[in-house]
Each structure stands twice: as structure tokens, then as C-alpha cells.
Length: 427
Ligand SMILES: NC(=O)c1ccc[n+]([C@@H]2O[C@H](COP(=O)([O-])OP(=O)(O)OC[C@H]3O[C@@H](n4cnc5c(N)ncnc54)[C@H](O)[C@@H]3O)[C@@H](O)[C@H]2O)c1
Image 1 (cartoon, rainbow, N blue to C red):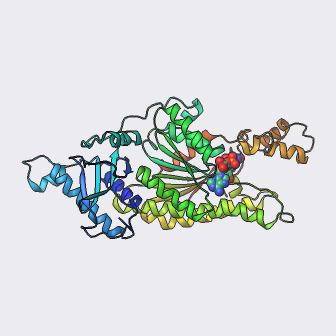
Image 2 (cartoon, rainbow, N blue to C red):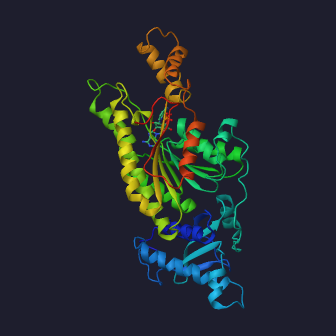
Image 3 (cartoon, rainbow, N blue to C red):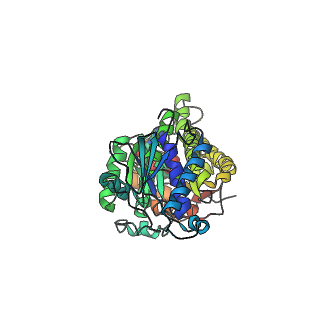
């Protein structure tokens, strides 16, 4: 059908599922090479019912909500009084076929996780879904003891998450932690090869589809919009959006050229605006159907978003600006049950940004003689560790603890949570 974005339809269907079973399942789009509609499927002709364009979301929501209710009523046990019948049925169709006239345009397959939904597609298995809760995720013993310590049972289980800049460094740690916690994680990175490789490794460890690689440049609006569309078509929606992609190009105010300042700002500041905008549009759509469902946009900010950073103004300015954005977006998106918060980690001395033997900050600072008396990169590291009251750098597990706290805490938004070992204290 022309004028239809099926990602929009998928997200509305996922919202209806969440509403019915109070649990976040996936909705996977498949185009109809298949011949027949399974007998138990919910079939709806959205054009005949009055939706001519996917931008008319109100009409789409109304049509799909009514179709779900009528289907559940039909599927309810016979012989029960009509009035009770509609209120007792908590069943979901495993397949929604969207038709125009006699022609099926698209199928949406519903199940507890993406592998189960993909199996349904392969087998054309339309049997009813009545299961209330998904089993614990498999393969969840693969994390380090430290990561396990950071896991709050169930906060991310079966949720759909997206992590920008997830292919390495801090983002990779977050991706691995969320996967271990039972989420389906989209790894969205400008380095598409790396995000796909990481997804393969995680899926092998977790023995399920726990991660999917995606390509995005967060500073490019069309790319960000396409990324969220792809998430909607692949899994039906989103629960946790982690805006982590960021770059650092140090330079003093008297030396830094405008191009380098703009580059840092485009990725760290404008990129967060774009990711929040399109995540917000998707999450609000889900909210229109599942109004009680709480979702999260979480920015990985920095301790440099809380205090100035010497000869690093472009980075600190963008991160300070990020705090202004989360506070402002939080005020607006709270109306759709979307929480917007930031995590402000201290330095990750083990991440490539610091430890890369060729380009890392330790080797750069050693060459530049930034730390008087330092003879090796280990001396530089010791110097920076000594600045932290807790005498060590930040780790992925430290950030994950904050991330799970933010998701679990339903009564907070517009906050920046420092994770700095006491290095930066709030004023
Ligand atoms: N490393 C630290 O010490 C530290 C401390 C505090 C906060 N942070 C923050 O954590 C985040 C990640 O930092 P990191 O140290 O892991 O960096 P990193 O350079 O190791 O990884 C960043 C990732 O983002 C990707 N990326 C870069 N530009 C992108 C773009 N335009 N679109 C999509 N992806 C892009 C890269 O390909 C890479 O995979 C950043 O926001 C950074 O400010 C880092």
C-alpha cells in the first residue's frame, strides 16, 4: 500500500500486545511471499476500515484496537455471557495479516522473543499465544562476575534496547550487560562492520538472538530516522534507548579550529538531539496504545558534563549542553511516560579512548609530556587514578548499575547520575 510505513503499524501492534499481556514481546514484519493466512490470525483491512496513510496515527490506533478487541471476543470461550466475554480474554494473535481487499500486504508476527517470532515465520505457525511470562533468558551465565553484580534481575529482561556507538568501549560494555540481562539489543554504530561482528559474538555466547547490528551516523538526521524505522520493522518497538555515541577531540580555545569544534558538537550534542527526537516519536507512538508502559532515553554523558575540562571545551560544552537537553526533553516527554536521564561516568582507563597503544590518551599524554616526571603510560595511568577518591577508573559494571537504577526507578526523570568514584560531587 502506498503511503504506509509498516514500522508505524508494527509499533502500534506491539503497544496493543503490551496492553493485553503487560509484558514486552516482539512484533516482526514479514512481507507476504507466503501464500495463506494462518487460520488463527487476526486479519484486518486497514484501508477499508478508513486508514489511508500511516501518518494518520489516531485512525490507525482506533482501527487496530477495535480489530484486536473483536478478535479477542471471537476467540473467547463460547457460552460465556457477551459482556464478560470481552473482559476475560487476554489472548493475543500470533499473526496479524494486513490486507487491502483480498491481497495480504504484510504480516506481523508476535512472540516472546525474536527467535520464536522468526520460527513462526519460517513455520507459518499461527497458533494462539496465551503464555503470560517469558522464561528466563538463556545463556545468561556468560558475563563476568562483575557484570553479574551489576545486574538487577528483570529490569531489562525481554525489553528491546538500542545503544548508539555500541560497537566498542563504553557502549560495548552496555550492550553486553543488557544482552546478559535478557534484552534484545540493537548495536547502532557508524562502524557497521564492528557492530555486526559484536552482535555475532554476543549471539554465540548467549545462544539466542540477543543483539543485532545496525548502521547509523547519529549526526545525520536521515540516518537516525532510518535507524528507528528499522528497529520498528525488525522488533516492533523500543523500551530503552541509550545515546552513547560520542567523540573527543581535545584542543584549547586559542588553538582549536572551527571544523574540529563543530565535529565534536555534531556528534555529541546534535546527535543526542536527533536520537532523542526519533526515539521520542517511536516511544510516544507506543505510548498512545500502551499508556501505562514506561520507557527510557538515557544519555551517556560524562563527568565533563558536570565540570569544565582543561583544553577540552568542545567536549565539555557539548556534554554540559546534553544536561540542558535531558532536563528539557524530560519535561516534555514525561507526558508520554518516557523518562529522560543521563549517566555521567568518570574516566574509563581500560577503554580504547585511554588505553589504545597507538592513539589512546595515555600514550598521547606521555608523548606530550603532560604529566611531569612520567616515563611510561603506566605512570600516566597512576597519575589519573590518584585523582579519583576511590583510586580507580570507571568500569562497564559501574555504568550498568546506574543504567538499571534509572530504568527501575519509575519516579525520576531529568536527572544526571554521576558515576565517578567520588571525583565529581553534585553541588
Ligand atoms: N572513555 C571514557 O573515559 C569516557 C568517560 C565518560 C564518558 N564517556 C562517554 O562514553 C561514550 C562512549 O565513549 P567511548 O570512550 O566508549 O568512545 P569510543 O571511541 O571507544 O567508542 C565510541 C563508539 O561510537 C561510535 N561512533 C562515533 N561517532 C559516531 C557517530 N557519528 N554515529 C554513530 N556512532 C558513532 C564509534 O564508532 C565507536 O564505536 C561517549 O559519549 C563518551 O563521551 C567516555
